[in-house]
Every structure is written in structure tokens, then in C-alpha cells.
Length: 600
Image 1 (cartoon, helix red, strand yellow):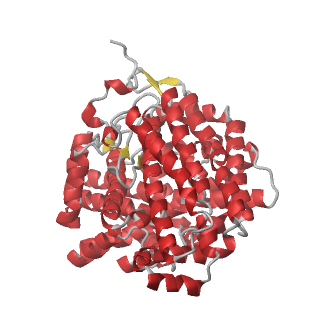
Image 2: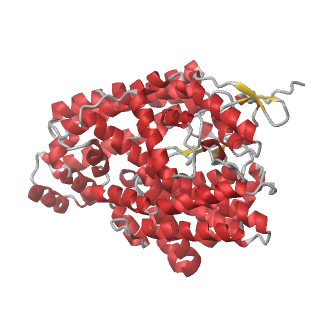
Image 3: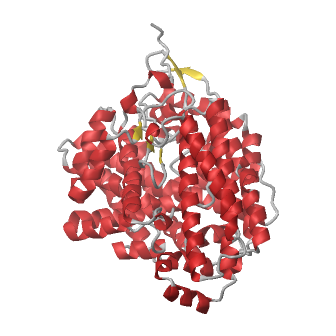
């Protein structure tokens, strides 16, 4: 038997540990039949052109047909992208994904006349339509959102052109994904036992968690040296992404890409600015945490490759997937029977693709469509962090489950601004359960360390990402060139600010921007930090108030996009238009840092 730690091929993983995509389409033939039907409906939809607002009935019929079309095409595209993510090397899956995306772009083009035609009708007449056709009231929020963004909607012809550019516009992210997931190959190094281990996206963080510092250094340098050898290609793909977003913002009469992105969910720029300001005001606590880490590890110098290894070394927190599932179930019991019934369904009905295999997309996510199971992709490696990732993605999927069961298709999704709330609330409840169920000082220290790392990774690190994203967008909007050198210098400087004087910011970390897929999501990352802050507030109220808070929370999960995200969160008890949620999260972080300082 070889002593090399091989990554499994997909066929070697058991069925029960793979997601149930066959529940969406039994085979490619069935997918093709649905694809052909969607193509036909897309062509037929053009019968509504120049007639959308000719009567209240026609407006209703148009919106109902649009829902049917998008409901079908999102199912097709969701299946195709998940099929590709199982093994990004497979040409057949690449082709399927391309066809799914191509169809989505075609549908966006063929339906692009709807919004401009709705805007051609004055608001008084639209109100009369709601009276004439009561069933139209279902779409009142949808239509109201269109009217809200009236100054940013173009003519039908211009909207059609932009829609047709969709597939081309996806090229930078597609190039990044293929390079990052399929083509890039990392070196093989020796592990703690002298065995060969191939570095992968899935095992890099577990390697960084090793208590063998020499192993951490080798893995750190091997990964980032590899990225650095592709730095100009990664810079070019990110440059293409940002220029696409700048083009879209300019053509739609926005002053910046940031304004254009946040306006989609009616989020004021002050929410973004308040986050960065609050975190900067509390960087001294992060710097203190780094000092504790350096002292606890007994290091003269703390490097970037020392940031993930647990401070407490004599606690074995290797957790199998099965053990993690049982712990998560116990931790989520405060959420009540209605929530727990869905938890049981998720773990028993093959929602989850559990283990890493060759060619599989890195990381973790929750996906699916309105009519599918809320699927979860993992790359589970028996670590405490992987158990928390499972709880996190389960939160996303249960949020999707409740939304899709409670809302019509038109509101059957939730905005990205609230997307990280349910996932992080699960993590907070899991951590609370684990801290309450240990009497061992070292284990408590280990968990506090993990909780602080959660704050570091989700609030501080994601805010740093958000500031980086804002800076590079502003740089290119001002006419600057997005070179690999500029990106690396900017990223390294921000690391120095956020981690402070107690950390040596190694040169290799400057290229880390190249491996972050979220920089292709157009101002997504700040919502991890705002969502975490909201989740901390909600989880604490659930634990303190019990049933009343749980009821508010479940109603939040069921709200979907039936209201704007800031309003939905206010109803749940959190006002993100103020600095209070982030400031309170920072207070909790300070308390945790002080607790660790006392125990060390």
C-alpha cells in the first residue's frame, strides 16, 4: 500500500455521502427535455412584447409566465453548476454548465423588455391595475422595487443588449474558477510522519492547523509560491471582473460599483461604511488577541502561517462527520421542533455532498433551486472547523427550505444581505453548546480560540476583504491600473493594519487575494461581517428569551424577499442601519479575548 495520502476519486465515495442530484433530474436525457421546454417557453414569451401593460390582465399573465420560465431555468442551471462542481475536470459537465448558463442569459435577454415596459406606465395607473386585478397584488413589492430603481433602468433595446452580454460578462469568474479549481496544481510535501501529501484546497487549512510549525511553513510557502507563479493571470481575470462591474454601474447611471451593488437590495452605503469604521475602532482588541496567540504559542515572532494552529495543543478535536452531525443536532435544540424537523430531514435525505474528491470545487456552499432540495457542498476533513462549516451551510439550507416552503416563487429567495445570518446563528448556537458542555480548562481554551478565530475570519478578515474590494474598485474607477503588483501591495498593507505590530506579515501573503473567489461576487463579502453581527444578536436573544425569540426568528427565515432585507431584520429584532449590532459584536469579541487572556 502506498504511503502517499491520495485524494479519492468520486466513484470511490459512498452514495449516502453524495448529494441527491438525481432527485432533480434522473439523467441527462431528462435534463435535455426540460432544457428544450425552457427554450420553447423563452421564445413564446416574446408574445408579451409591447403588450406588458396594455391591461391589468396582460400584466398579470406576463408576470406569471415570467415566473414559470425562471422557475424552470433556475432549476436547469442549478443542476448544471452543481454537476460541474462534483468534478470540474469533466468536459461533459463543463459543457452542461455552459449550456445552463447560456440558457439563463438567453432568458434574461428575452424577458428584458418587461421592466422598461412596466416603467412606461405611471404609478397612478399601476395602482388602478391592482384594484382591477386583485391577483396582481402578489407582485406589488416586485413592481414597487422596479419603480424604486427607475432612474437606473434603460430602454428595452439597451436592456436587451446588456442581457446578451451576460455570458461574456461571466468569463472572468469562469476563467478564475477553471484556473483555481481545475488547472492549478500544488506541490506534494512531507507531512508530520514523513509521508507524501499533496496540497489541495481542501486540506490547506487543516495543514495550517497542524502543531508542526515546519509543516505549516512548507505548506504555506508551497501554496502561495504556486499562486504567485500565476499572479498576472489572476490579476487579469480580476481586472476583467471589475471592469465589467464598472461598465454596468456607469451604463445604469450609478456613481460607483459599490452604490450599484448595494442598491439592488436597497442598502445604504452607510451600512458598509459603518462596518469598516466599527471594526477599525476595535482593531486594538484584534492586536491584543494576536499578542495572546504569540505568547500562548511561545513564539518569538508570530507569522501568517501561525494564525490557524490552535493555541491549546493537547486537546484532540478530530471530529468525524457522523460525530459532528450528532453534536450539531444537540446544539440546535433551542430552535424548537419546527426547526429540528428540518434538521433531521437535511441529514437523512442526502442534501449534503460530504467529502473531497479529485476535481471537486473547493470550499463549501449551499445551493439548489426553488423546486429542489437545498443542497450543501462540503469538503469534510474531520476538523472542528469542518463541523462548524457543516452547521453554517445547514443554516443556509434551512433558511432556503423555510423560504421556499413559505413564499411564492417571486419571493422564494432571500437577499444576500441576510444570507449569512441563519448560517452564522447556527455556528453561534453550536459554540454556546460546546462551551457550556465542557469543564476541561484546556478544552474551553481550545473552543474560545475557535470562537475568536470565527470572529477573526468572519468579522475582521471579511471586513478587510471588503475594504480591499472597495479600494481596488475605487482605484480602477479613478483610472488606475489593476496590476498584480498593485493588488499584492494593497493587500499586504491591509494585513499589516488589521493584524498589527504583533504579527510578521510574510511576503507570501500578499498574493492571497488571488485565491479568494468572493472577489468575483461584486461586494458580497461585507455581508459576512454584517450577517455575523446580526446573527450574534439573534442567537443571544434566542438563548435568553426562548420561544418568543424563536418565533421571530422562524418568521424571519420564512420571509424570503417579501420585504427589503433591512426591514426583515428589524422585524426579527436587529437594526443594521445603526452601528449598534457591529459594536455589540465587537464587545463580545473583547469579552472573549479577555476570558482567554485570564485562562492562558
